Image (cartoon, rainbow, N blue to C red; front, top):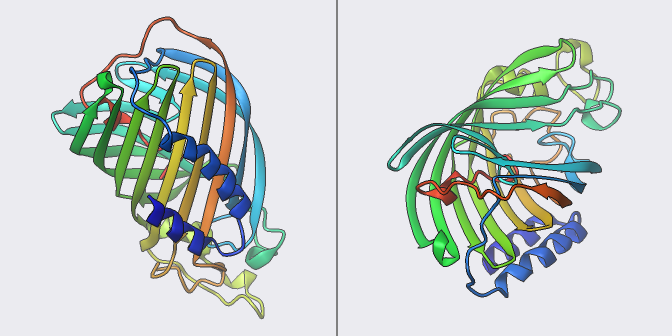
Length: 309
């Protein structure tokens, strides 16, 4: 883990270090904890809080912005459908070591008021949804002993849908296979969860066109015409931590993107090929059920990354 932190710090350059330090202070508490009886999650919870993100406007943009967001916390942990700190997922098929469910992701709207996109149309927010095939690779420990770690291979294929003008527009497809390591510790008063995921991203021509194509009408002296194609879209690594107590939920993540070798790398709209995105949030839990969440086989394996890969 120390080697991972050194790599992330080297890649960070001169930006995002305050956010990284804040997130790592939260993460360090996990390393000091000892095995304890398992913490049983309630079937549903409701809370409210606040979070902050430091992210680029889009993958490849050089500028960073801090985004403060209200953070409603709603959790439901049913047999087939779950919404909680680990994301939204619906289990469609579970057989031995193979699971099929759906995954969601997305991106924020982009205002073209500066940088490489100055003078071009704004970009609507993108929502992504689609099936995800998951393969269970191995496990150590057990939840009833208070801790477990698991390894998975995720293969999500999602349709990208813009929301704005038109109301709903299909913007292509994204395929992002990744390996996922999950470490869960259920202490007496709180449940801690590490998540580390890494893998490549591939996307259709329509998806890359939405972000990186420059039509002739927007050409200027610093921005030549460019026509994006389908294919490799770079690689990504995400490290996250969340803690769920009986009254509070807190989470943090650090994500590293490397666009070197991407099919759109030469687009004039790509200003940087390596960058970090970070986020921290906390919510107060006001209500929760007395009924506990069901415990399914390979339970920790249903834990999708809190931050969509």
